[in-house]
Image 1 (cartoon, helix red, strand yellow):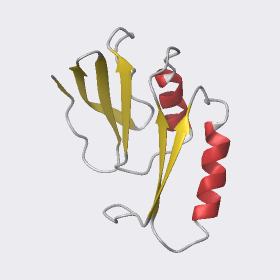
Image 2 (cartoon, one colour; image 1 turned 180 degrees about the vertical axis):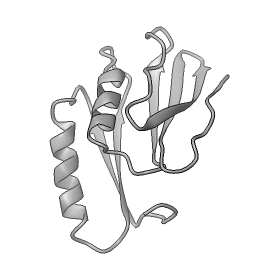
Image 3 (cartoon, helix red, strand yellow; image 1 turned 120 degrees about the horizontal axis):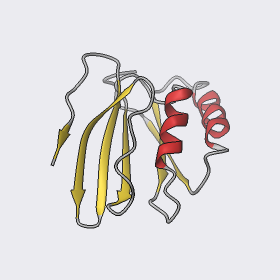
Image 4 (tube, one colour; image 1 turned 90 degrees about the vertical axis):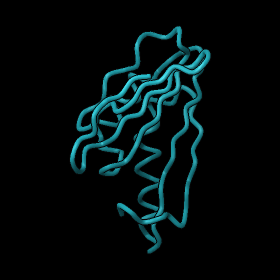
Length: 119
């Protein structure tokens, strides 16, 4: 539900779990949709030595795992290759380098597209 504050936020830490994230998402969503209150699923993948952000973004886009107008935030080492391209039906809105980290914000298109900014 766009614009609704979720009653439940399920935060799931991931570590090199690209093979399991779709099944985990499907199971969590099925359980949470059985109750009437709004919820959100937040998947967190810390920037470990094996940067899998491009693969995870591809999966998120291919399986439409982000709500319309929903956001994805990717944190990488600034030594990693450039911020990954936006997944299907998303756009990269903003990329910033802060200290040793690069942070990229992606939004699923559900209304008017935003314009990418860089700092």
